Length: 363
Image (cartoon, one colour):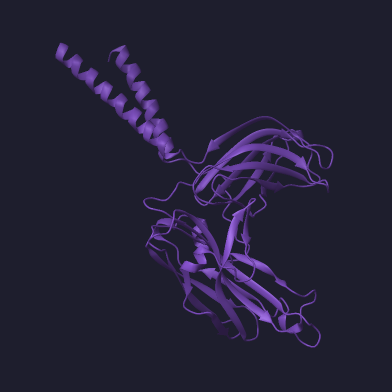
């Protein structure tokens, strides 16, 4: 084989290897799973209106739970879609989802079920007060508004979301709530309410769903006022859907070769499309300053990114440390990159085939 042909084959092999890596990336070791504080329970709001719950409404005696039973087939690998109603719908379409409500107490209980508004702002999924409505709740109907459940009994509630044909494009947010209340008694003049719910992230628009993605723009080591080491990660939602960020941090190559972690990122960071917010990983107050080799893996649903850095934590509370080197890697190549690599491999293959045919004709 001629020297030029051998070089061309070597280039093609490298391109093919890179292309394969882009299509099927390896999973990161120790990748944290989606948070699940309680099986199937998506949200929990504290009881309102009393500093001292009555015996009839104590947290141990009056406990309810809720979980989503259905998820789209094309989202079965998305852990967010197993806990929340996450979907992309075209105007004029209708979907149905079932939730299961559980009376976890040892006494019969009446439970109200309803949909209420929510929003995503300042890095949080914010619940509207009481039964506040919005566009999404106006499209959502439930097959019942109340349940009377015996102790430890469950019941299913069917939710139907009908998107009008003239609905504008964009993502809407809401919650399907299950709520119980204890009436005032002789000892307490105020009612006590508790509710749990399943979030709704419903995007509307023609054609395919907007892509989900994010960037970790900056890592900042610090110490809180109580002396606990923390890592702050500034995240930019570069996609078209809201994100629920979770993940974990591992430390290595510390003083004396120490290793630490993984430390779980504080949950609750939610970013609207285009928004920026911080994810915080709380560490230990006794953690040495460093320097440390850090590996932070963050993800939302099926999208994940890993950032690596060498950093030192500050000695004083409330201070900011230093990052001396950092790098980020994609959890998966974006589709345009994969398409470009595919085209490059195909072009290289065509060039080799053409050169081979010319050589045969000369012989």
